Length: 87
Image (tube, rainbow, N blue to C red; front, side, top):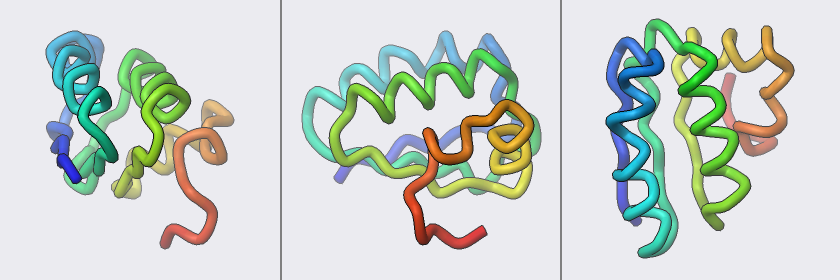
């Protein structure tokens, strides 16, 4: 399983830089996204994560509290996180 580690600040620039990494990783199997250090998550990153969850079978996200909060504010909690993941 490949791991993609998200930076502390996940803004549009970070999403643009990480897009090719997501595409490559998803083409080779299950992916774990380590978002445990995220302190800011912008809409572009949330869109990238939602798209990756839909198109990359087996992708799992380990969220930080800030990412979980941003997902909750945008209504993306169920889209991004597996049921049963710790809060």
